[in-house]
Image 1 (cartoon, rainbow, N blue to C red):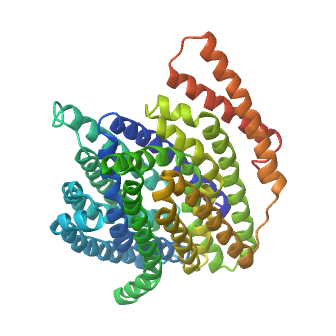
Image 2: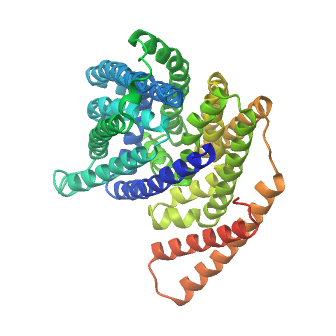
Image 3: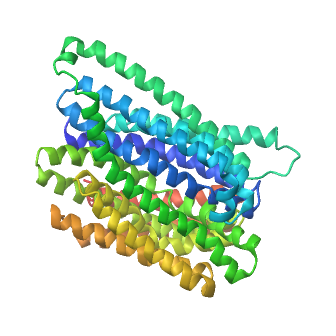
Length: 507
């Protein structure tokens, strides 16, 4: 199978699974939003900075490094070295995670008081400490399957994790928390169930895959003598540490950003509970919804990393250029219809789905971010795949620094509006920095008319027709508001997709 078909096939599998998982995740967010207070949602979102920093130290860099190593070893048919690399990665990641998890459990009160500035988060951090070991193993096995371009297992694991999370939260809501005041611990227990079950699934999938590969390859699997463990460990660490530092620095700054938002909002509102509520609506309702279409763009970005790494090994820079150009083209086409839908229906989403007017206002404003938010992950993974991991690090640090400056200076004066200005400017800057570097390294083909103007016209046409459908159905037919909203959005997407097909912009 050609590299292009492998990327498209993997992207399709991950997208289908991702869309299903996102739908379940959105259901979960809506369910939680109607079960716990906005302030509790804010406390739940506050523990994620801790999780992300620990995950970046123990998993992210190792997962990406393993994916690159597996891609290279697989192309050379070094199967013994490949499996040995997986064992080393799992051992290293799990050991680091066990140490950090113990630290989080023991010092949960101190982290909550002095870093998160919210003492009630301590109980949630103790549960989170048990989530991380499962997450580390899960991440490494996913890295292996992405490295061999087998997207089926990562896709299935994503679905299984989300299903387990949704089911466990529902069961807890009708059992342990029935009749009691529900809080964010229910959501963290859902995380634990999801990661544990996904971890078990990926381990079983890896075991069955290795056995089937041994039977299929027979003696040819032993043609190449495996590399020594020290050699593989050294190679893994050399690949992982710059990626890990990248993720640690980015997630550390993101954590500072997340902690500063409710703190600075308190300066604006003069009330910590109200500030946590606004933070909960922003990060627990609006942002997950606006990021829903990134299921497609993130799937594409995930498949691009090993593919670009392999093409770079072969010094096929023309292939990289064509692949990157098409990827950016598709990401921006997704962004155009997303921007239109959120502009037209953002307030309706907030009022109907979350029953929260503020969420709707955020969604409408966030619509302007879609083109920049959706394309950045793809561009960053291209730079990483080309061995330029430091560039996305520098770009992301610059972008995050801009947002933090806006939080400190503008949020105390203008409230959450000041943060939204910072988001827009930082993502615009990030997309520009990534694009300039990729254009310098490999070149990039970009047709403004085919990538922005025509898709923009088609998105506006689809949005206009969908609004006519929405208003007529609302005025003349008695129908559920959620179904009405879903039908209108589907009409917009169908009109847009048909126009793209007719003009051959999807080729």
